[in-house]
Image (cartoon, rainbow, N blue to C red):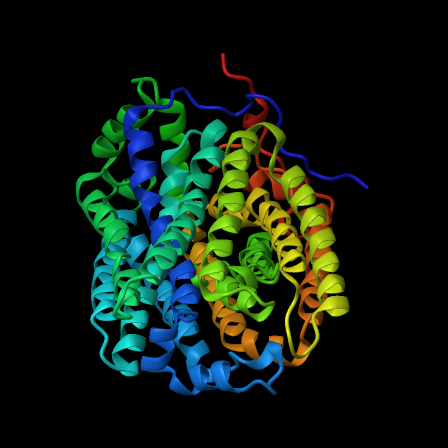
Length: 509
């Protein structure tokens, strides 16, 4: 059985180098990752703080403090509590579909600007919340920001970067996600200690910092050449921007490919309808499967509810928040490793290694907690820290693979004519399962108990096999040439045909 492994070496490359403008553009755009990560991490921390629970979720607080006969796994089970966390992702799902039109018609920068402003509004509402409705309303605005940001930012980075550096530059976004979660955990750990019980307000409002960076960046940075040609047909401006970001005047080869892709995209009036055509079947499957599998790794068990999970196994409030900081350090470290090796070793190798690592640790954690943690009482301190070490190993596997690659791969596989629609589907599917898992996890934890780790472990095994059999290697392939890989793949060529564009095999002169 033959697999498409990508186009090796430096074939199909364009002229250019890494310029300061590209780096600055990617870093500012990746501040959107900081927003996403911060919102992921902050909610789990504040929902483990006693003052926050007493003010907004008194039923959960009383049950946690007084319900000694309630199972360890069920103390935090509250639909209102999960609604606070998951409402953000429902809002993000809906807004990401609207973002597709804005990104295609008005450009990548326009969607990034909407994202920054919406998050500024949401963080202000959250920090000033006086009742549950105001709290949830703030989360809905944050979701709008994440929907627009996650739809446009990975596209922006992939279109700005050179093909041979696209993987590393795109992973900057996920690095931002990891750093955002880490910062949220550190801030939660510090604000939990503030006298007066108002520290959670600082935690919820601090999302305004990366949102400000994104908003300013969206105003001053150029749009991508792909977007300028697609929305304005402004060839002169697109050429100038392309020369600036490549650091050379010799950009005709890349410009020709952009013009060819744009001419095809202009015949597309309804990209959501077009992506349903048979020849886009592999992209459509990946647009749904990759974000679905990324959520089914079980990472949100850790990201949303790490402090709650650690309190479940017997750690105190402060210790649980500190433990969440520790595991995020491991995640960020492994995401940096992924950034440096993804364009050398390729996407598939990292998917395989990360999958095996996550599967092994999830099965081990599930077995450990089944054997040692009953419905009542807690683990010994030594046992609790063994679980912490295992979770660190698990999350480092995610940081090496599905964390960064779950955003990178979808952003680089769509032809220009369906690129905005495909990315919207990716973001919508991701947010839908974020919402579903966020809304059901505490109930799942209550009913499945330690078996929840085996549940997600089974999905990790399945997704690793899926990547092995169905995803071609995309490293070093120009973004407007990636569609040729499907024509070589043992399975997908029956949908898209086996005619290959020979130009991608010509070495640069």
